Amino acid sequence: MSQSPTRAAVFSAGSWGTAAAKILADAGTSVTAYARRGEVTDAINTTHRNPDYFPDIELPASVTATTDPAAALDGADWLVLSIPAQSLRAGLAAWTPHIGPEAVIVSLMKGIEQDTGKRASQVIAEVTGVAAHRVAVLSGPNLAREIMAGRPAAATIACADEDAARRFQAACHTPYFRPYTSTDVIGCELGGAVKNVIALAVGIATGMSFGDNSAALLITRGLAETTRLATALGAHPATLAGLAGLGDLVATCTSPLSRNRTFGTHLGRGMSVDEATAATRQTTEGVKSADAILGLAHAHAHDIEMPITETISALLHDKLTLEQAAAALMQRPPRPEH
Image 1 (cartoon, rainbow, N blue to C red):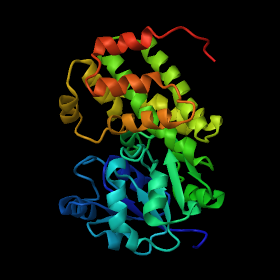
Image 2 (image 1 turned 90 degrees about the vertical axis):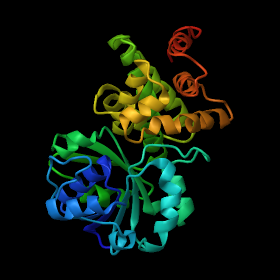
Image 3 (image 1 turned 45 degrees about the horizontal axis):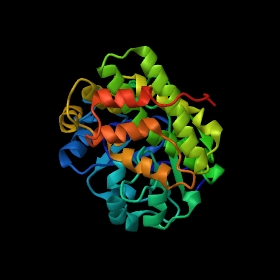
């Protein structure tokens, strides 16, 4: 691979995928977005806008789109994946024959596979057979609407190969988007996945009008249980105190632009899971990943304690009412904070 890769394939053209395409194009990288629907690709190619997510924001002219995954991947230095975590395995099975032999696969996904409990990077390696130095993850406080508007943001790019992380850093560094590098793939992925479950809890508390103290409590203790799980599985504690941990957690738990927080708010106001799903209208990774995250905690030799995740999982399965869930968290036995 050349030292200055200039071609990226972004799968798919959802809200975060579209924002990623804009970042890369603004950084000077040529981008082809893959989308399943022809009306979306036609709109991007003719009007330079994504009609489904950002009809009011123009994309750079260097962003094109196609419904043909092979065409999108032709000559791509980077395959940037922004699809639901539960769709990753099937999608990769179809796309792998078209991935170039030196292309680096970058995951923007923040979920855990339900059936296996595997992180996106593990699924990517398993399905494609690529080595660890060709799999990277990008995670951080990245609300797509703000990034599309050019508001300042930052993220962490993690890869076992520091050079690959630095190359992708150069490929997506813009005046409004500042990427940092790391080798802690585990920490970045688990920070991004667990924060969605904590955001559901904060949203529920918001919907129940519990106030800012409750939100701060859930964010802080949520970070504690995220760090317990991540470090037990090999992450570095500093990662969870950084952009991919605390930064992403704060943004997702506090912003009305966050779909996980919004979903939780619907639940807190009395909607059922099905009603909240219909109202949110986008993939809510915290709902899909809560059980898998809990499974990772329980499968560890020391059965890692994750009370917020456990409570949210029970609530999603109608094993607890809202009132019982709140009581379960507040009536836990008192203990030292650290």
